[in-house]
Length: 518
Image (spheres, rainbow, N blue to C red):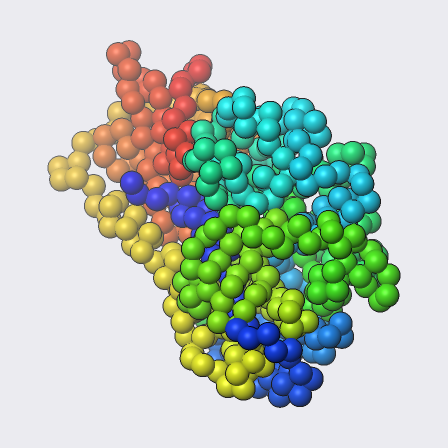
């Protein structure tokens, strides 16, 4: 089946954990100060080269070793074509790297007895439902943070795309059929993890955003970190998102991720994130004070769900609670990547047995520079040399994500059938349609054509161009503006459409809506 623009983007989000586990050490030796210092000098050269050759507009890198911050530096420009430079205090959107941060916040709640990793969601948030009663009754915070609830990985992302807010998206997850039996399969779900975090915060009587600040950001002095998009856009020193355009980088689309803040809505700096790395490597201790109970934090790093092999480094990869856990060529690592296809990349990699961690932020997509630099740094520390061209291999992985799907869609809809069957009069299609998951869709005449309006109060509007008879095309994703997607009507006996199927919203079989009234 042809992927819609949004479903392809959601599959990218599903792939990120598998693609994002950076290298892990292979022997039990420690990383010496001399090894790290020598590797840092070469890491800096590699980062500068990535900027000078146009691989990314900007990078920020932080490295922690033996509970000390040993490297903080920014490279490149906050926005291409403008003079402001990135430094260690530039705020980036970190996308799915928010997940392990949220796991740390929940660990703080677990450690102080507010909630348990095995607390049932039905007790914390009785209004939440999965599609089936039994999983709904048994679902726990642990299940949602390890992506084993049975929710398809794409569930809810499409509703976010058309303008719904968090509470309504979470309510509508009950209409989505599971992709696997409960606890039997791994399916990376932004809104599943979001529900786990929000439910865990309910006993505090505070919002998730306030809990994250109170339990983690403030105690660690992460003064530039937030789970609110308004805080990000309020920072003067912030990095703009970039995508490829006409052979260069362009600031094109903004991304407002508040609906899935626990899963993808954190913004931060490498200076702030270095403190979080210290906390993780010190088992919840920071500057001599135990901020999070080690037993609660340890749970986040236990491998729970298998995900196969890292596609570039070959390490065996698992998912814990908001963390990737990998056993690779350099031993054990914890990590996570993040990406917005409209222009954000991030990566954290920790080597707990070596007391070494690195965080890399970039303001562009597609790029594998964070993974390439992280893998190169690990080789430099533990082997004294870079074993292969990691930047080349990781860039190839990310560069190939969108092209084939966009090309397939364009080929499918390149030309109408010959001879094409003309459309019916606009009155045959115009009207209101609805289902429980998508809500209401309105099709209306607009000039010589039609427009499709979706989301709360018709928040998103998509012009429809005729393709053949009762099929039209739209270009619904700002992330993939050249990727067409079908909108098809079924005509009833009265000569008017009885249903509409919106391909971009049909990834989970919920894209067909029935006419409700004229």
